[in-house]
Length: 474
Image (cartoon, rainbow, N blue to C red; front, top):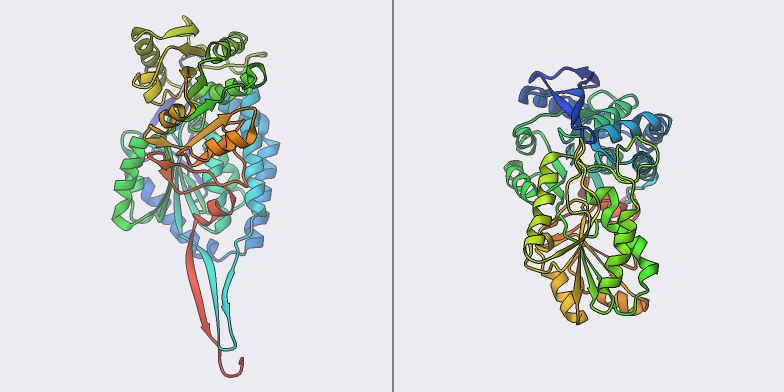
């Protein structure tokens, strides 16, 4: 069983709190061990990052961009090992793991192509005023277990591009691909610029409250995000919080069912439904609700469920037992309240955390399956009669990450999508995320954005440069 260590100041370091087992969700057995850091080791990592920042923060844009391209080259060369590691720790099919690594490469190269603009505000014969953007210092990245490699890239690469140093804290359920990522980065950047520490039982609080950290970028649940925000108040850390989502989609009357069923299925069940921006509530006009539910059921029944490393598998397990238990509870609750399970609906009787893709009709607002974020392979298909009512129900959630409207009239669908209370609104698609388009939520789904120029600037502090020209310059 391979042992994975921390990376502090460019060195592999054994954890002072011993080690813990990493479980393969397809078998419910341990396949690796990972070091657990002490709070003293967190201090060492922060000190190393702060020391490294004295030089890295002054490095040129050209130098940082060149190093990011070298990092992307190594990620491409090691794609096979990275993808297999993601499957083992997270459970997704191998093809999807390859896509995750490929996405990480693309996002890294995009970060390497970005410019940090200097905005000229005023130029007169007597003065010049410019807006500059400077790195913050030490950025802590706290990432979840659903896309362990990709989300780490989303957090880390723009932080490095902007000139910050990084402390990475992956989920203890899926730490290994992130450790490999940091080791790749550490080959190319000065010691201390990129560090990874993992701990259990409240270790995250030690990071979010640490006075030596200048910014937290966190992806995870709303409840944990609230605790992050409270702990960060001590030194007024900058925050980017991408939190829970209970994304609604509205299918307008007259939408061709067969034309949209596959796209809707993929949007809902991407990564076995374990995606923050996945489609989680599907409102369909009553004239087509049953037909679309049946079309989705046919697609669900064609999925090949199994270990993601096995050939032909299209659908893997839920990542951990706690999440599997929640998904089971939500489906059982819907069934108890009269909902109909068209397919799936029961944990598979085999080793691992397998739950088949499940389509549910008859659930409605007020049921746990609709009101709570299931974050798993279940989709409630909910009938509505009036579009205004569907829009009101879609917006009733306390969350506001993404949402979508599907319909044959693009202009009509766009007009309705613009009224969704969500950070992102899609028309005739869902969960489409690109490195050049800002992404973030509203309401209880967090604040701040990732990606695009707006996302890069989240890793900087504004500095207004006000220059009174000398007589010789006038």
